[in-house]
Each structure stands twice: as C-alpha cells, then as structure tokens.
Length: 185
Image 1 (cartoon, rainbow, N blue to C red):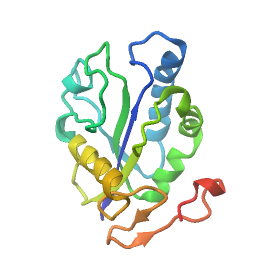
Image 2: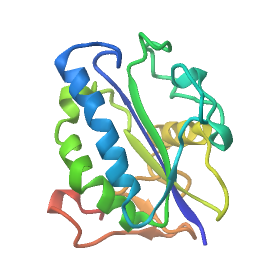
Image 3: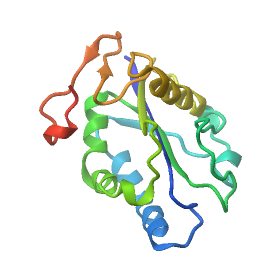
Image 4: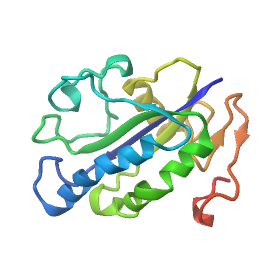
C-alpha cells in the first residue's frame, strides 16, 4: 500500500541562532510539536539526522533520507549561525491523518503564529506525493516536488491538501474536517 510523503519548507525571518524572543519562541516550541505529531495515528516516520551527526542541516548525515537540499529560491544562510529555515520530510498512511495532525493540537497553534516567524515568499509551504510501500523519500525529492508544485500547480506528482490526489492519480477530497476554510475541495 502506498504511503504519503510530506515535505514542508519555510524561510524564517531571522536565523535559528538569533536570540531574539520570537526566534527563541519558535525554536522552543519545536520539540513538543514534533513529539505530538510523532504520536499521531497515521504518522510513520520523519527525516532525522543519524545519531551523533553534528552541524547545521547541510552538514548532517540524514541516512536514507538523502543529502539535505533546499528550494532554489532559498537565499539565506547555510551555517549553524546563519541558517534561517524550518523544514520537515515525513511519511504518513494517508491524507486524512496528515490533515488531522497538521490542523490539530500544538501544530495548529504554531500555524496560527506562522506569519510572526516566517517570511511570505510567494512559494508553497508544503507538498505531498505518494511513494510505494517501503520507499524512503529524500530531501531532493521534496525540493523537486515543491518546485514542481510552484511551477505547474497541483498534479498527481505534487499536490496540496486543497488540491489532492489518490494514489492512482485521481483527484480526491477531504470533506467535513476542520473549519470550512481548511477543508480540501
């Protein structure tokens, strides 16, 4: 049975190393958000650096998740002191569990603050695609799918909650979940 890959990317207004209150607040919330999402039904895995790996995102060993990559439009730092991004790569059993995790609990609270922390870039912040059972998506897969979504819109190759597709490529929709403006049509 196929699994759903989710890549998220956002350019922060200031580097993660910045001691400013808003940056610290974002950074300090991350652990609890990751923990809650990781316990959500339908969550399978997320890219994490190999044990003992040290440095910035670009320096870490991500194992089967591949070499770390970012979209071409990211023009901020790449070192521990200058990196200004937040990104995830995860696997889910399906669209509904991913939607419930993203738009529920601590992650929903964080989403309500996203404009405090992230720049508005005109690029999509997330992308989905289906992978075969046992496959591990890579960071480069996520970047290429996000760029595809930006350039061509939603297709079975790269899609969003609002314009989603079933594993066989047919358009699909989630109904009656969350507030009306969050529903997928």
